[in-house]
Image 1 (cartoon, rainbow, N blue to C red):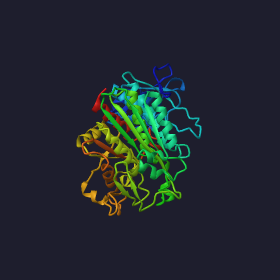
Image 2 (cartoon, rainbow, N blue to C red; image 1 turned 90 degrees about the vertical axis):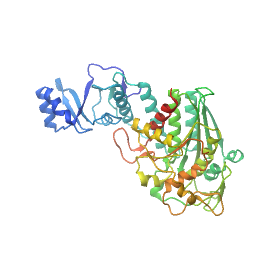
Image 3 (cartoon, helix red, strand yellow; image 1 turned 60 degrees about the horizontal axis):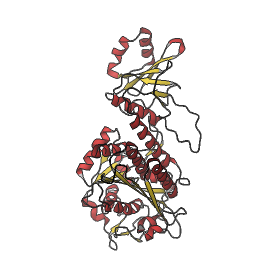
Image 4 (cartoon, rainbow, N blue to C red; image 1 turned 120 degrees about the vertical axis):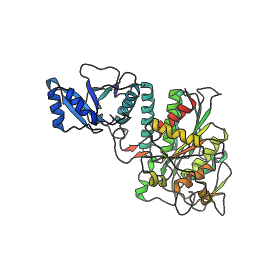
Length: 460
């Protein structure tokens, strides 16, 4: 069980009472007069997220009132681990769905990144309510922690080889297989775009390939592809310092597909998995690829380089084409791909693109069910001509910059067959500031939504 959860209450366990704003007066009218007076004196109104600590006998904490909205969700109690005194707590009156959501939100709020700086903070424990799906809470929280840890780790300790080591660790845990193609072997095995982007770095580029057949050879194949740019300097079209500061997170897509694969394997979903992570550092050296260069790709299409800072789509296109060759039931790719998606939707809402309306609709429904929002943007074919080049099949960075998230998705679409259901998630993978359950730093976004999609689509 996760360290911040407990199976059973003890004599010192404090009760947390969820209260809706419109029901507060009714609750106060039934409470002891001293309790009612205390809560009124605190100015507690039942606003969602507000708390009132009510004293008990002997100067102890007696109970905690928490304001909740109409629907108890993942974050309803996620502010409590950071604010309540050390001890154990139980939440009153939750049904099974709400109890599971509460336990997961509480667990996510107890995350700390301590690789480089130890923390002395001890979080209070939650006694799980009857009906809590502890297996779901544990696989979701631990996979989200994996995603956060990978993203938060700086590039010096999270290069392509380190991502490969993380994939191998997950594979060992669940009996999967991993192969890694490194350095110049990427050329001999026809991953030329991955090699071109990563060749200038001191740490060799690689293609990580994880496979899992836990459900048997006849199970549907799901391919996951994640952008693994372990640091993005922008290449020769160098980024400014402000934009480079967070570029350790540019492997956030890779972190997400490893986390999602872990959830799928832990839940033993009846699918086969193939996870492809092209892992590189986009660095500057004498052999770096240049603006105006024309690169080969695994599919055979040639690409003129309009900007070396549009490198993510270059490494993804080799991996997507390889994934597509197996004729999978679905391809999902995750990538911290464009600033344009952040301009359109902000940092907290991932952009969803899909070549299949049913897949898109199912993804959106799963996102709502999992309290893990995404927003669909169009694969608007009217912008396809912007990818044209006079000297190659494609240009990786159309001039002008308008609709940049769409043109990036359209570029990726060229490497997926029309008959293959494919969704592309362009995400931030980072919390700019802390919120309940979501500390500043690396973040799993659309992870729960994607798992719920796979669970609903393929069953258990």
